[in-house]
Amino acid sequence: MIYSLCLYFLLLQVPAIVATPTGKSSPAVVSKVKDIIIYEDSRFHAAFPSVIKLPNGELLLAFRRAPERKMFGEKSTNHVDPNSYLVNVRSRDGETWSPDPQLMYAHPFGGSQDPCLLQLRNGEILCASYGWAFLRPNGLSNLRQPVFQNQNGSVFLGGYLIRSDDGGISWKGPEYPPHIAPEVNLDPFGKPVPAYNRGAMCEGKDGRIFWAVAANDSLSPRKTSVHLLISEDKGKHWKYSNSIAVDSLASFNETSLYETPKGHLIAFLRTAGLDDQACMARSTDGGKTFEPWQKMGFQGHPLHALRLPDNRVLLTYGYRHKPLGIRARVLNAECTDFATAPEIILRDDGGTTDLGYPWAVPLDNKRVLVVYYFNIADGPRHIAGTILELN
Image 1 (cartoon, one colour):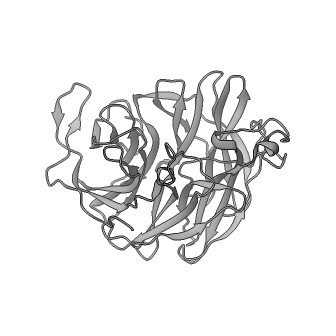
Image 2: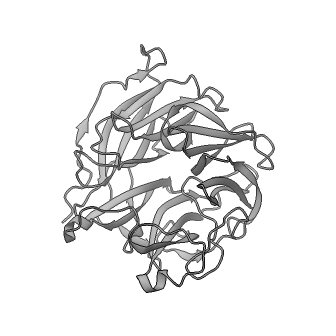
């Protein structure tokens, strides 16, 4: 059974405390209203949400759902599963959500991950995802190499997109983006892996869509880099532009893009090999080139950026260090004060590091909903949210 639907497990009416670099408190730039549970069912591992506001004001939240493997007597549940698929729930107010997730897409050859929604100005919705195929041992031994093999005999399928022109009621696809040259791996069919990523795409002021995609660019050491694809026809076709962040040792992946009022394109980068440092890279020429990536001065991943009504930017990220939870910063319009913007603790009660991946959406001119996946005391992985009031 579904154990809870929109149950309020914590109600806070006091302002959020903002931690400054000096450790002193300062007036809050946002106030925390409440935490909510959006979807929880002990039979399922629910994770990796994204959320958009439809033109009619309704909220559409997509996430990846897979069986909770402990239910079958297994020791643990992995993030890669043959029965993971993309589902969504809906809300009119950000607090009360539809109880039964609706299927968006189930990949015919394996499990799907991390649905990343983008509401286009023409009314269409794009959703980017990627998948894993599960092979038996006698099939694994026959694969054309190199492939990216993960847990339980899973082999990386690469990325795909689906789209909706009716507010997410029905979905068309999949559409497969092009392979990019830096990617060294093949898919289980022996073909170059299609481009992929987890993170927010961005529709620019000129109508182009920007997508930061990852690539396994080295087998020894195994690492990833991030590159820019651009579409001029609402995501139907993509062209490679340039690299965003590449390093000989460090990895970059799970990148969200944001366009500033001046038209600068900001890539907020998840890293590996850099002590979980959040990083960013900036393009001032519409994505033709990016300035060298730089550390932002704090830990956390992955990141999501939302423009606020006054053009400030709410930057949210998961925090997998004690105390475990969700954190945020409010940056200026051009995202230049990332090193000094105070850190805001949204949640510090996480049970294990299996949490995070926040995504924010405006509820109205004064309130924002931040969604993420969470667990309490290593309990069911569920989709939760925090409502913030802007000051």
